[in-house]
Image 1: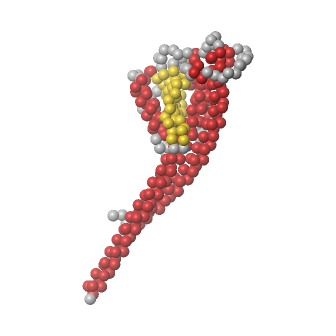
Image 2: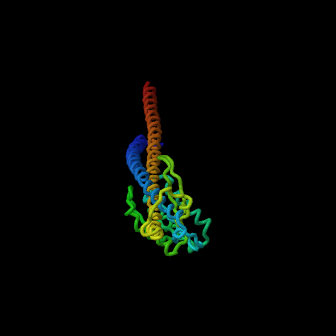
Image 3: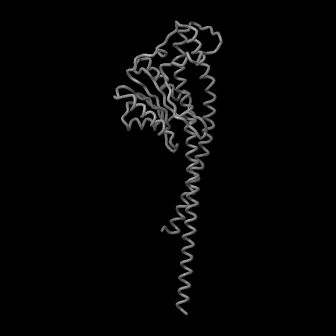
Length: 286
């Protein structure tokens, strides 16, 4: 059985760990609140640009663009968004499992797909599993700006425009609530939901014409979808971190209680043994 000094040392070290995890929980809660605000603030822009795109798609049959057209799938692209670090529970593993399962089900050869990785954990997973990586970016800020991923988003969309890939899917964690994040997969390219969106009843006058507006706005729209998914994913990351740190803090508290109980039992046993030895010594002298 461990000595009193050893048990007390474990209690002290666990208390220090609990302080750290409690502080990390509060930091993650603050970051989550800000990330949630960023996600909500981006929604009006995302909805408006989709409305304009849908209006063009539904109002004219002359305008066309490669990003709107289905073509034979020779090579697929997968954009996966993960965190740059751990300590976020199953946040990273869930989305990476979904990605890997899809690849295993849909592809027989590595020549049939490529991966765009946002986040160190996703990049390292793909590298470890020897999956082909076309592009990657790590070290994204906790509250990212569009400038942080503009180059990668532009290059990713260009892969489709240049026909290096024939479809693009995103895998990320959707923020549902502070205690719930949902692994989400969505087809980014080709864009197929504009006709379903319907647009608004507003009448737009396009200058110079619908086709040229479409050529400019469609890549921006696709890039905005990537940025929106990143904001959503960041809110999920901070929520997952907060939940994980709360669980760690609670577990540390339970461990401290168990160790304290053990410490008291060992201490009581030692006192009882000393009393017994003293009583035995007194009886021997009589």
